[in-house]
Length: 351
Image (cartoon, rainbow, N blue to C red):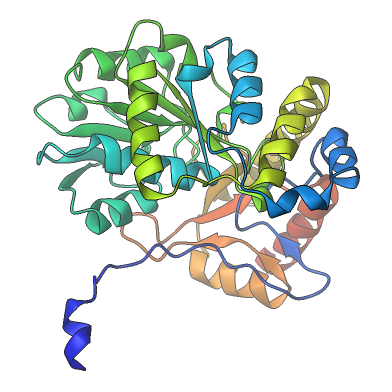
């Protein structure tokens, strides 16, 4: 070890989904939306004035904040935006989880949570999902430094009902509770409606899934004005200009086209429900996902074997070599044609 290396911060990094660059592949491994963004996004992009890029963007991200506030029926002071929901969540961890007490989150969940906790020196404890991959609200009772969980959960797709979220909030009124709603637009009811009654609730959303804009990196949080101000203070102390100008303009356009948004999310939901029947017929088991993916396990063929076989055919899915879930594959819902190609291969391979 060279002398200066002893001072490097050492962490076990988050491992993102593979982004293959091959031609003619089927990419079902990173939960992207298979349909393009709203038409207004492309139109705004064509008319964008590149000369404006020589100036810094609005640090308050006002154009996007206002559109999101109007969309959710909130004040602008209740909206925080960032570079994808990962940036928003990282800012939330940095801002709210500083008591020295352990933060609670599920043992099978979004794998960035323990990475941020370790990076920022935040103690944490995982709470085991039950055998059906469900959260038990009672596991989140007791003294802690905060609570965070995705809803629907990732990578299982299981939805926690709103009443159980309220239960967790009722038993954790002295800490911030974060509900990560990256996939809520594909099923279930948003916890946004609980904001009026719980000042310690932060709801985090993303444009990467239902808005078809993973490449623009846009995320946001909804919460009490005091929470949003605290996060903004941390952001301004770290990086004032987190959102670039194109992302602000195009993100606002994406929110405006509600009809297109509803149309594409419903197409994904319809394809997902048909896929459940096909997977069941092929001998797969899975939680009843309400996200834009399914978390499947075959009754006799190991997940890693299926993962490798699919990869050889340029069909990419996600495999997690981790405790409790090493027998599962997470498969993004693609277009009907993409899913048909997947099932055609699986039928041939399994038979």
